[in-house]
Image 1 (tube, rainbow, N blue to C red):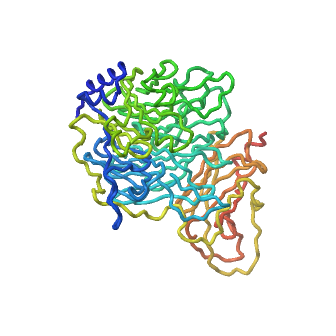
Image 2 (cartoon, rainbow, N blue to C red):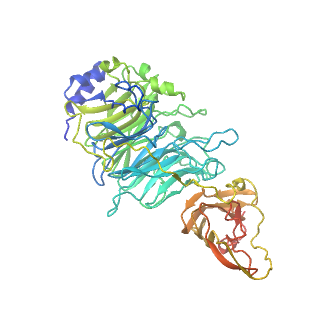
Image 3 (cartoon, rainbow, N blue to C red):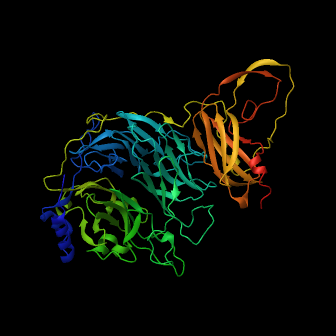
Length: 640
């Protein structure tokens, strides 16, 4: 599938040099060109009139192509997720087979969803939640982009969600990626999903992790920056975060800039990228002067692009950011475009972008495999209105690894503007699975395809288990949401801001005649704790049934550290909690909530009191269970 770039590049350069519209120049050349390739809408329900020939798919949150381990992306096997377009296109998932796009699911759509491939015929989606939960204080439960769907075997194998308004509620997610499956496994056992900051007073960003058996909450602790992009490259997953001056952080401030990238290697959590990136023009440009880095990996090379943050209020003496593009190859980062090599003016930038191109917003970046070039999508800064995104024009700038502008593509083309659809809107998603083979979706869901004339289709590649014509219409019940009313009271999160109940470290005994009876077994057992690395508490315990568990640390009446509410299956489990020596806790508490009926056991009443986490304690319900004093804390003495 070798495709020559020379003719197209030459056409772009001529267009840029002489002011000819780049779209027209590309059409006249013999190389690749962008063209609207909108799939036909699905058949309407019985009794409904047919949809027009061309309709938008609705907001497309993500487009991803399958990338076999150790090989470039497979350009004839793709997926996209959409929010739908009224009665014409329901929310759901579409697949590409080399010949065209077709609908494969009318469930698990999303307002702004994400897709993560975990195998050749298996993938995950970040999807919208389902209505049905009651409002609280007139506030409707959030539903946008806060659940997961696992597609496998031609169906939605599982759906994951949590109830709203709780300490462990899922937050909206904007990043999803899986590491390649490790033989003999055929699907990934290491997938990550990242999103918004945790609700206060927790400090961190929300993350979910799939370990091959279960989905668990593993937040990025101590820094509450929203995860805005996440990509797999080689044997690691890289995530990009949005920085705001209002973000909560428990990390001591230093002179170094806050890392804007985190990475996770196999079987490990995310850690910050400590090397300073060549992003900024001078120390006077604050870290928050740029929006988050849009990421684009290909063939072991990682591109990143960020635009000026128009929402920041600069202090006196601070400098504004500008469009900045980075490239990492062989572990070395270089600035392709930025303060040292500014993005030059482009034709009609005032009309298209509302000002100089260097001050525009970056929407996406997609490197072309087999070349040293990338496509950069720009747009004017909008004020939060979807109308502004839908009414703009897609602006694509073709750049080289040396920062040269090879051309500018403005869509729709002159011919496409004559269509009734007028398929415009700013760029929302952009991906290039192969050389001279790219797909772009506008904000409202119009699809454009870059391909050479005569090569606009590829060999047929059916998604295993998802044949064309078979549409998934069922989604299973959500894992993590109780499907029946439990005997325990609803989750109690008041302990986050108030003093824990004064249970103390022991329980009073009640002397009664020894009579055998059946009671519920303890939810928690075999609790052990230790300090690792001096300031990290490791708490190990055994759960009798699946449960939600959270560890809280207080210094007198003030909460000084906490984990997120985690959902664990029955068995031996552990929690890690980072502590600060300057705010050393005086009390530890466990917040627990059983998600299944506890087993029963036979005991003799009157012979010993209830054990920690057993009958008579509050671990079956959802209050705070105070842990005994542990040697690892007692041995440290009194800290300020």
